[in-house]
Picture (cartoon, rainbow, N blue to C red):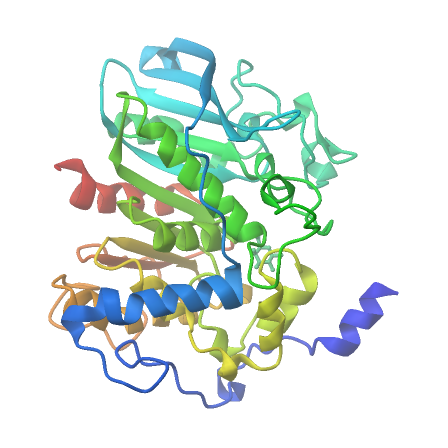
Length: 418
Ligand code: GTR
């Protein structure tokens, strides 16, 4: 069976720090050919190279977006959340064709305000899962089967409304003067391995092409590409300030927000919540989820070139601290949960720490203070005064009000008074 095959190929995960093999991380200021980079020329001399490697070897390169973005207001309520918010849904065309491919964005924004900053996020269970409001369209696309939550035969049912609400404190966000915009990630690409025949990929194949080349976009890159189309939409409306978009995501969607934020420099702030392997966690630590494991369980998330690094992490010319560094000097927040050992909380902290010198070279204060802290902060003690934010929260793999409170404080610092 498939599971015994996995058992043979993928060793049991390591959770023991003392068993992590010795490794050397790629230096942010040394190019692949060994030449030193002057910190002032980080962008041209090093960031470009790093982004090309992440693109071709890991996430896969995405095509440019549509030249003209089409969007359509589907519904609107001027008195949502007991009158304090406008709620609306907007269809955004990702690709023309018969039929065209569209994603539906749900927006809550403070009523009576223009040009507000926004948190842009993807969701796992459909827009209707983030709030019980019966006016939100029930998404009919393919969904992961979670029968305990009312997902049946890969479809959402009425029972799934509001089932993810604990992760989406919409009122708190609106009360603090921000909009929340969210899209079901499966509108862009359904999250299963079908050889890229559904979702956005086939719409962008060259003539005769049947699947992405080894260096072309996997699903994470496609979801990130969709987030950029969300930002394109904000550029067409006065309700939301396209220059103050915080891209936020949890877990596989945290991997996605990091890749989206690194790629698309229009994102003003980037938030990774429990993103783990392929997100903020360092690949070379090989603790919890490994490269081999993730490529085996989710072969569609990354491009095929990434398979070269199974059991071979040291050959990867980058590691995840360089992805964080590629967001510099824009603010980035990385959040871990202490019980989320699968995602390697310490490895998530270390990429923030090893990205810090790049943030400082670019004239920011990195993690804050004179120098980055040696050790991972204590549980529930956020570092949020610098340009890199970090916390490890008590509890498990999840998004909580504690997480959102830190993100809102961080956004106040960096976006609110701009
Ligand atoms: C797990 C996966 C993680 C993380 C998580 C999620 O199964 O191993 O990398 O992405 O799913 O997205 O919830």
